[in-house]
Image (cartoon, rainbow, N blue to C red; front, side, top):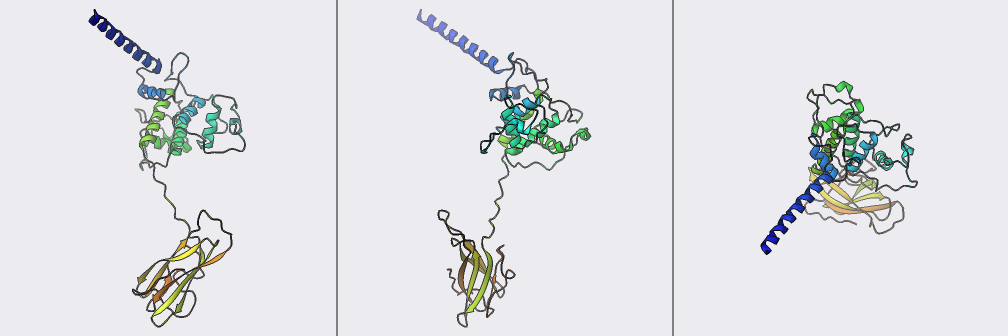
Length: 339
């Protein structure tokens, strides 16, 4: 009898598993997206909690998309937020969009979208139907908030290009280049047509995947401006073979310093490169203009000149300031010292 009971238990367990799987699928799947071209993308967005249907479990993929629903999809799907902004006064949606109510379900979404520059017109009616070009523009503006992406230098020809609002064309081109959106069989974009909920979901899914899989261009670090000014070079003979070269500059406060970075030789010239010394970040300094200096010694057979620093100087860069002998940077045997 024991083997029989075991067999029944296994069969019962399998039936329960199948029932749970079917229930799980029915919970996730919309009731009206089967055979829709964007069915798989809609299901993924639903699993992520980005899309939800009505009380009857329908998504209405062929239905038209309102501005309220469209902007909510975009902001929620691409994770836009205003967490890094601190407000003196709490923002209200009616401050930016007079036709919207502050207690409406979409209010916070439009505040986020506005502060992130999605370029939503001030007179937007949240119940208005979004066109394909409007959704395309706001979606691409949101994508560009996620990073500085490189796009192929390509222009996609549209048979209905004249119907596109010029301000939206760049966004449409980027969507087409990245394959997030496609033209129809007649090579038209149909910019003024209402976007369906299915197409909006498909584009949103494509945008999410693009952001996820495309590394943005690394930011270019701009060199810090030379913090010292009125840079001067003076020469004094030590003896017949060696000259003392002093470079001086004005600094914003006593925390700065100056040192000789390098000396290079071109013909009879010794080019002196100076480097600023920056203040200790953990210390406070009085904001008093301070003169800083660096000294080096060069062979008298070379003429010392200043290398370009980008700083202002008393004369032209590369010219000796001050006196005396037209002396010069350190030759191979000369010593270098900083002070």
